[in-house]
Image (tube, rainbow, N blue to C red):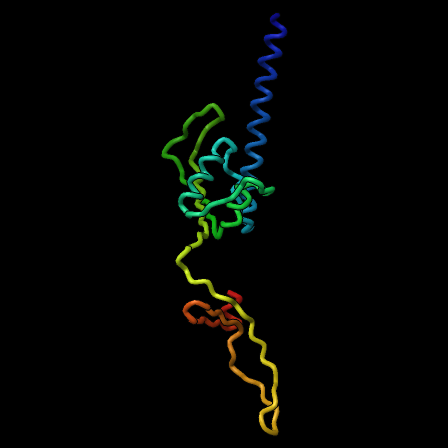
Length: 167
């Protein structure tokens, strides 16, 4: 009976170590990807995901029809990420926890693009300057914008140069 008890304690300890290693691996991988500008939410613990999804959906005022979607909602929300920052906040003193000593905290800040239903919808066109006949000479227009966007409701338009479009 003692052997079974000691084996159970040993296995419980090993399982806890494995879980800690797997969770640490996800955090390390997530941090490396964020530093490479591969934005992700992989650092969020699986138990916290439902609450995080709820907060993001509420803050961005978006809705998902997940009834027949093959893509997980967290993957869809990750597509809305536009910037992330990781900051280390040092603690005043070393704190002992069940997972070891804590010297500070990592703070992940994520920025999401949210749609605005009141924002006008522009139809975007790339302009290509093609020579045409004007009288007896061939003419090609110069100093044209690279792209234009037209709002069909208000007939407003915006234009971009090649440099503006690439930034």
